[in-house]
Image (cartoon, rainbow, N blue to C red; front, side, top):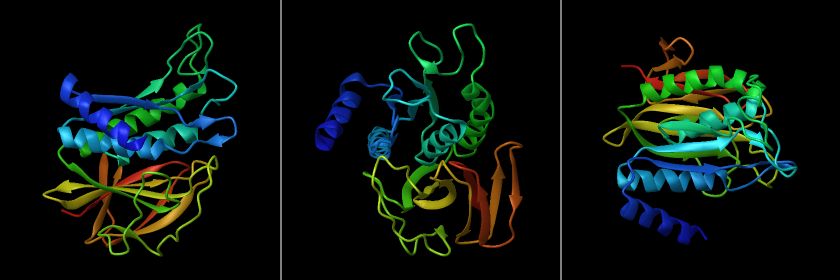
Length: 249
């Protein structure tokens, strides 16, 4: 199936010649989180990069059957930050409002939902970080902890790494993924920026990241960079949340 889908993506780009690759994947079910989210994300990222195109991720924001659950604010944060870390240039949500669906962005009478209120902040954070990364290439994506289908484990000597290293953890879907995601960005195959994501959308965490030089952290709310003054950065990440860090200029 993976081989066939990869060929489908190749043919789609070659024949349709889109200016943007847009796809959707909905993993939140009543009993947990389905596997395949990161595999799909990685395959779309690869196809878009091969074609020199941006891509957009349409993520789940509702339930339309008892088999699917309505995502919570922390789960929406997880979707926003994992999408950023994989190099997407945009994000969209299924669905804004539609009969037979619960959750979404608004109720049929126009009343904002809890997801709407969460996205008021998350969408601004997405845009702020995406604009900072606009002129950099997504160079690599690594996982530490659990490694779902389609993911690559963080190398021990990676230029941006975690200290202490996060041991490999068994993954048994539909349990939620736990661990961290590091999306590298830079120019000329030299990473200068990294989006670090707490993959556990059920718990906040604190981690220490070590970089190749003194580091700076980006505040996606204010749009400001703050010097850390050291190659070591202690990062406090909310459930499913992330942080953009770079080498000091």
